[in-house]
Length: 299
Ligand SMILES: CC/C=C\C=C\CC(=O)SCCNC(=O)CCNC(=O)[C@H](O)C(C)(C)COP(=O)(O)OP(=O)(O)OC[C@H]1O[C@@H](n2cnc3c(N)ncnc32)[C@H](O)[C@@H]1OP(=O)(O)O
Image 1 (cartoon, rainbow, N blue to C red):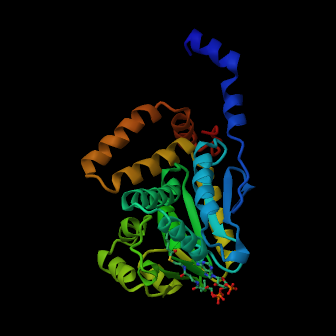
Image 2: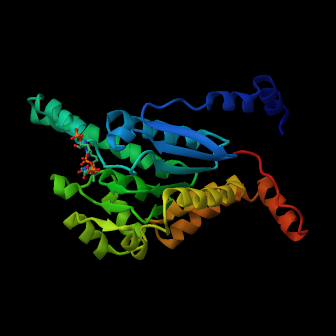
């Protein structure tokens, strides 16, 4: 390390500073726990309101996933819902309140700006899951409606229970889905035709079909068995090099709308740095010498 940099790091104790700044805030509508080393669990926690997404929850989702993106000890995130279901979608009462506030704005231009700002803020809350470099594993039990589909399609992996059902319900409430489902669902399931059918009809579909169309990776008899499988997979991800895992997520997300040439250029640029990480040397030596699985520094 350069002498000046060494002096600066010693004087400010930068790693301590980062840790202190990154201590997690509390949320009104989400519960965040750390059930295993480096594994964070985010729960939608308005069970008596069917985990509906109200104004505070939109704000909490953005704050929480941004904080976890910056939290060095967090390597993987599990997202689930407390109570009897994953989520009943947007809180229709808060949606009605928001329209009545909009209707009080007389000028069409200013009313339009108000509505645009609200939609963009909700979009940012969902996109925070994708922008967080830590893999997000979602677990659905019971209904997952409307905004719930926006949430899980922005997650990296989806699992559900046998009693789970799904509904892209927006057209049935008079809306074109506007916070991510129309963009992400076709890519997640890889069938534009099925995605369009689900979005145009707003029909319910159940766990078996969700598995068949590739929306979920696996179906479990109940929430307990789903959580136990997902936790084991999360621990496996958390034991890998966080440098490698996070670069993998970044490159997969970047590449989904790009040509192969652009995706390859992106990963070459990331790896011109990451190939110099101690994680690669540690992993390669352990593999070559059939030694113990290495431990990696937080990232
Ligand atoms: C910028 C915009 C961004 C995002 C937009 C997203 C759009 C959407 O999310 S569209 C989807 C909206 N959600 C719904 O339409 C779901 C409606 N609810 C149901 O279908 C059912 O309640 C259920 C989830 C299947 C559960 O059924 P059940 O167990 O029989 O409970 P209920 O008796 O129906 O409901 C209990 C209680 O909760 C109230 N409630 C249900 N859903 C919502 C909701 N989404 N928002 C507000 N309140 C909801 C319901 O009215 C009942 O209230 P009571 O006061 O007890 O009568």
